[in-house]
Length: 67
Image 1 (cartoon, rainbow, N blue to C red):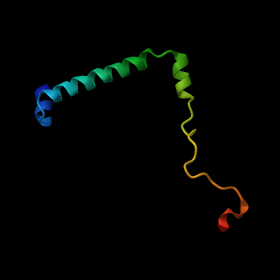
Image 2: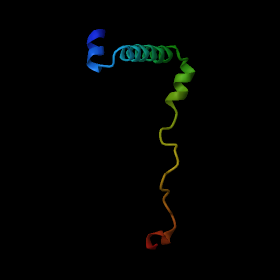
Image 3: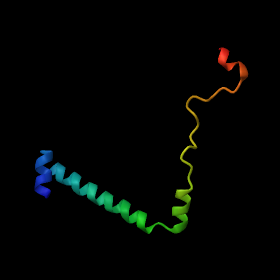
Image 4: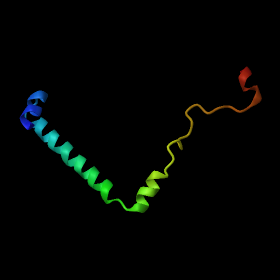
């Protein structure tokens, strides 16, 4: 499997290092997700997804349509 992956990328040893680095990073993220406390999970779950300011804020003035 490793050899087929490396051959498909055709970049030699650098590709193998990249695959290993990705695998290690993936395991770290999964490990972190499974070891989070319940409080942390609840805080993350409750974070709003739309709290960013509007890029083009609406103008609520009545004469704004006539500009």
